[in-house]
Length: 464
Ligand code: ARG
Image 1 (cartoon, rainbow, N blue to C red):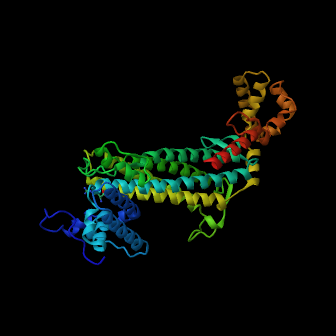
Image 2 (image 1 turned 135 degrees about the vertical axis):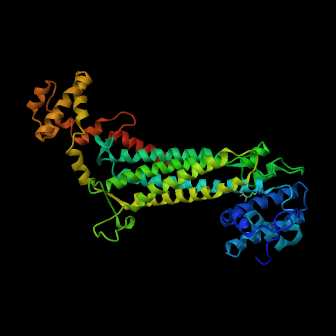
Image 3 (image 1 turned 90 degrees about the vertical axis):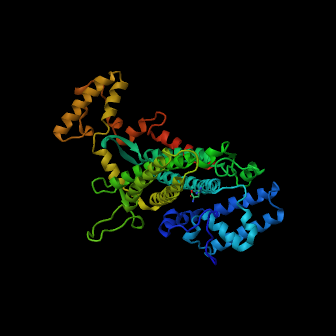
């Protein structure tokens, strides 16, 4: 900037801000991220001022040219505001006056930084939500690609982190596709509430000028306008909703991360991490660490923290704008950056960072008792009341454990001794592949169900 920033506020002030307070007060260090949106908002506002006759067409054209130049300067790295500019709104106005002269001082007619900053954040968040929804789609696609490969791979399923019933690995992965689907839909709903224009609400009470709020809203692609000026300048619900939705994305990514971390341990050995997505230890040469899922799990906590910050920032605010609201930006920006980073990393991890160890998985499901429910189901299907069958199988499992045997090791005579309803087909019924195939209820892990779920998911991705 050539000239120093003029004193930002009116002549009411006799002396300058204490330099430490100036730094404390300034938001330019971070709200520079809003510059492109601030310029778009100002362009729309200037057009509206001309359309309504508040300024002349010629003045509007000069403002537009000045704003375009600032955009170019910024893109070329030549727009470098200082602390004296205080925030992005003053920084742009200051530079505009330098470029176009006195007419630049007309831009702020019928506007306040309060409706201006609200407009900027909404434009910013709308854009970022679109990016995140796209990333969720790629994440789902990566899960689907793995699921395609592993429809018939059988993996132990757990409850309480105890072996429960075997699953199609695709079914397991599709659970995360569903979570991401809700995330995608939720962000779509939140986007509607982000996409409301506060421009024209003024400082808090509207403006005496004959502005056209519908026109600026239309120029900026907003679907609606705030109906109440006080609400318009002080509402940050949309930021909280977004951070809550981002927290849920974090929860989902973190759960998947935790599973991958467990699966990559030598105790599980269900996946091997490839070199492109894992790191080594500085001292233990044998180590290959799952840093990506660990970081995702760790960063999720940060996002929860931002949600808490925003909620607490809002809860005690009287109407309307309060400077506390300046504190909305860093949590919001960091949430966006963190979630975007986590989604990219997890997508790459799914695409090229994991190799499922199919032999280990096959071994795991043939050496446990996760087919015990199926023995009870076998009897129940042959008329034995389920609870009775359940108790019987409990006994067999206990006997097998004592004899260091598995269910499949029992002879037909042993089965029949237990209950006469057992026949030779019991062996087929308790084989892991059949155990999975049998759960063909809607939404279950049966291969036919999973095949249908896979194609339904793929279709959903293709159509919206
Ligand atoms: N930098 C301020 C913010 O981020 C802009 C709005 C300032 N408004 C005011 N009345 N001081 O919230």
